Length: 252
Image (cartoon, rainbow, N blue to C red; front, side, top):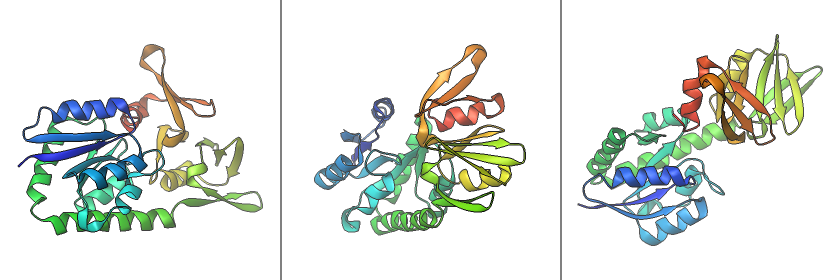
């Protein structure tokens, strides 16, 4: 049976990689490629693919929002694609919904396609797993999309999506948000527990960054790297965190 696949990713190179890998697989028909959430919904409703390779982070609509907008009765199989292995991926494992880590490896893609074919005969089962996953992730995000930062005399509520980066400063942690710095009386370990469950990654023993704020990965002499944030801030990546950071940024 031919598996009709729609690729949804806002990165042209990521779509190209998936397309080239899929061309090596038997009985595959790529019915389209889409680079943003709204067009993804239209393409899914119009073309009714058997499988969608769906990036989690997309302009306008996130991958979970796309799935939430679809009719459960006509929902295709979903394999999520992500550049970071954090709590969402753990949720995928709990609900037995498949996912691919960027950069996608041929063997891992083949394994996911094999699994989709096997589950295709259990339509209600695979679709219910996706719906259960969405509900789980939605509950977690709704309850944990902000943190309370204790400063001198006050408690500041920060939305996690607004935090650009955090750094340790002795026995304090500085949270940087839109040109402001909030100094908190907490340890870096506590900040790490709050942030790394979301779209953050540690790039140095004293630095945690929001992946959504990273504009550019900068190559430095002697195999070193740094990240440039959207506000122009440049932060070095230490050797101890380099491999994990490059994977999270989809480079390694």
